[in-house]
Image 1 (cartoon, rainbow, N blue to C red):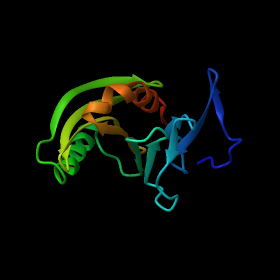
Image 2: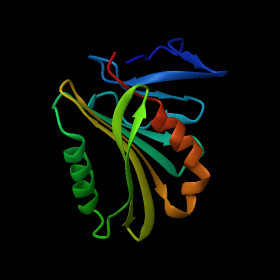
Image 3: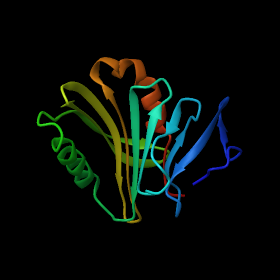
Image 4: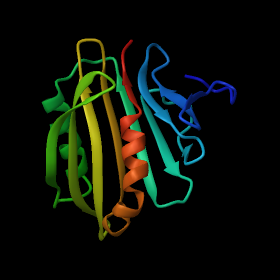
Amino acid sequence: MPTDPQDLTKIGEVPFRFVGDVKGPFGVWIDPQKWERASSEENPIKITFNHKKGEAYAIVIVERISFSMESLKKAAVANAKKVALDVKIASEEKRVVNGKELLCVKFTATIQGTPCIYCGYYYGGSERSLQVVTYTASNLFDEFKQDFDDFLNGTRIGQ
C-alpha cells in the first residue's frame, strides 16, 4: 500500500492514492483531498476513512478468503443487524467497475437512533474478497452521494 505522498496517480486533474491489500491490487483509489485514513495501519484487512468535511465514512475490507458476492452481502446485513434491528435492503444490482463484475447494495438502518444509509460494493472471487462501503446519516446522504460514488468507483480488483 503506498504511503509516500509522492505515490499518487492523476485521474483527470486530481491526484488519487491507492489504498488496499499489500499483497495485491485489491483496494480503492481515493482522493486524499476528500478522504483521510481513520484506522491505524496495524489492521491490513479493515481500513476505515473519514470524509474531510466530516459526518461521512468509508470502509475497505480485503480478505484472502474466497466468498461469493451473495455471502458477502448476507454477512454485511448480518453485521449491521448486530447494531440495528431495522436493516432493510433498499437496492441491489450487479455492476461492472474497472472491468470486474461486483454487487452494489444500498441498505438503510437506524444506528443509535440515527437513520443511516450504507452503500457498498462487494466482490468475491477465487483470489480474494473485497468490500468497499460508504455510509452517513440519511439526511446527509445526498450531500455526499457524488463523493461516495467516486470512492466506490475507485474500486480495483486484481491486475
